[in-house]
Image (cartoon, rainbow, N blue to C red; front, side, top):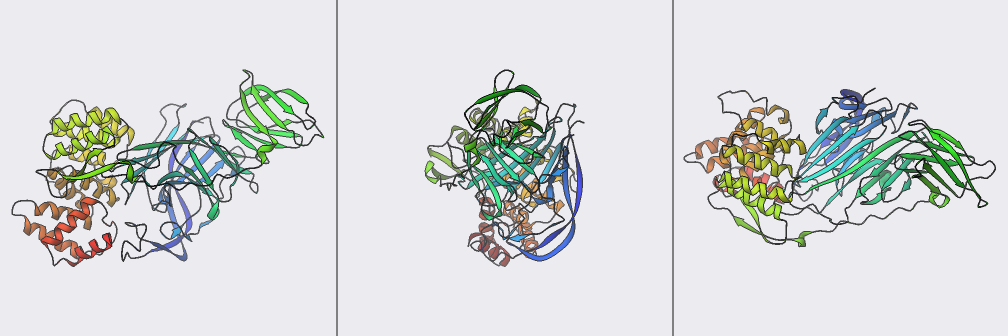
Length: 585
């Protein structure tokens, strides 16, 4: 059957959590996320899932647990590749104090993702033709670090391999972030059985199941088996930090297998198990070729082989010879598909090398943009750095000055040097709209192609519409209304660009979907810079003062600048002072 994907619910008992109050940033390493504490109790929950399926495998992705792959069913054998639990018990540990070591999880930092137990946004793309893959895109704003994560999973119709494009986009123009360590986390029940610079195989003998993970480029850093989990970390050889507006992408393929009776090695999608008298192969594609065997006595033997795709094929080895010295499998074009020697039975784990800071890579200087609100500070290049970020900063400065056509030219220049930056494409589309360009906005299409779930694109859909007097929230904003961080992110971007009118309109709309203290502070901040609007600003502050201190907590420079300014304007606002104390202590 063609590949398909659909939404489903997983009803399962899940350990409950208690969110601890944040007393100070110094005692909350995961700030702006609160620390979590497992209660030791369970509760029946319905978790949202997306299922990708073809004739060979069924993959279950849990949207409410950080978008992890929770289950993989090998339909060829009926074996669950990952342990299927009757309950999900949370344990102490991880970056927030609670952890669930189940499934295949996505890593973005050196520590575990803070939102690994929370919801992610998603987009399902159904195949239009029978030979196209089913596609699922996951997206998350990583609060506190200015990075967004996008994971794209594709399942072709005739393959058991899941293609994964893992993308980290830096949203910063104010510096470098050096703690990025992308990779995967796997359950500890899958023991490392094979590893080189391009592929890693994992196997659970109790279930006769495993996964083989291949890398598009040989930049694997380490396999770490500590803590009851497997951590596959990537570290590119040419950089150890994510720079300003960098867009870093890694491609993996995850191939589940089962029913071979064991596991020896996997290369190019061909998985094999060697035991006395037999070699079992599992291939993604049909092929006809030859097998060459060097036996214990040094004799070379060969035989014709025919392998059918996705079916374990047992091939007889010379009887009474034990394990051969080496085995070579070639196709009819004499291309080597699979090679194995006895010395590959042992495996050494590469130690993890700590990522070092890259603060010394660039000398930066804060400058104040003229004729803009006080929070609008940018970095101006003094030495080093990329041309792309230089033109991006110049474009942002010109947006704030109302020089929209010139800003568009700056973003076009930036894209000449970094065409994979979705925020630069969005900024170009924004500048063209403000400049009154009525032609087809291809920049917006490019931004959608690179990051279809980017919240700024949702905001642009709203801001590009004529203003109305409707009191109800716009359906264009509704898809991200349940993600307060996304609402604040858009407001801060517009304010940093000096677009006060768009920022005020966006904040007013976002508050129709939910009263968020951070947005109220940004609204009051804008009002204090308006003419004769201090009374309105005071009313907004009074509303915020009555709200409990809870997520989302401020961490962006614009948020903190706004709060410091408001404390000067309203020194009696105790909640404001406490929020700033927590965020900066």
